[in-house]
Image (cartoon, rainbow, N blue to C red; front, side):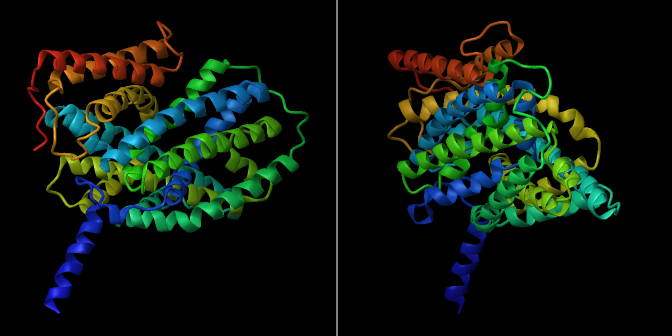
Length: 441
């Protein structure tokens, strides 16, 4: 018995750690369809519903028919690149960042990633509590308050994430098909029950198509950047690309487009309130619970992975519980309402990170997938951080309208960091310089 119980205990412990700082072994890989299903569950989120509705009300059918496909194609291209890096390295986003930025540089970059992911976790948790409170009041006439839904929601998410990728996979295997079926039926009801005339903007245009494309890309750019957290489990490159194309080329634009059309036809931006008002409050609450469960599970899972690179000695399950508990406490305050603007701004500094790690992995480190191998042509960490700063600065400049390359801030920032990092690495390679700070030990 001792010989069998010890390995079982070790295996259980490794599952909880979920290979946060190690490469995923081949025997742990899964089909791209399984990964895509997980990420479709994450993309079906109430904030995405609101984004789609706002796009529809602002642009109308003609505008969204351009903005959503172009924005989705941009994300799909970025997702294909990051998925390729994931399959090549089989590392989490944050270990890939450590490999590109060096140990000390990666601590700063991963801290930014952690703040962003944790911030969206708390914002989503607060929105969930507020929406459940309103939905139960409208449907049952019972005042639950926000505290109970927020705490129960965070407990539900943390209890899932504590068991890692496999638990999230099992969750989505039954929740996502159910969620898609319910949403499809409710959208049909919403459109059938609408008294609105022919599809047209429900209000004067408040944004142009370029701004709409920016909103589509900005709404899920972080998802494209952290795709390696999930695609590292893909069996091969074909499966990894399948994930990116399914998520960004099909699921995301369908979610945005469907809710945009509902908003245009009904004139109502909040899909949940629309369905509650039509007498389908119970099903609207089911959608709300399932969508928040899968989405915030993704947020908490990725945040636990990044925290593991910053606090390697702390067991991952403890990081999940700590982040989930702190997130619940913050969600019960008014702080998340003031965080959204900050998180949007912070989001502009994240795409340049992908520009650097994609260039590093696909061009300079094709034959070095191991996390502990660093090529001599890697520039000093201080210079890599300057490249990140330059890419972020251009992204902010594009967002402010001072200058632009593609009119999409996130894409401008990523392209700039990608190109400049290539130049810097080529410069160091020609000079034969060795890195000053690239150790990952």
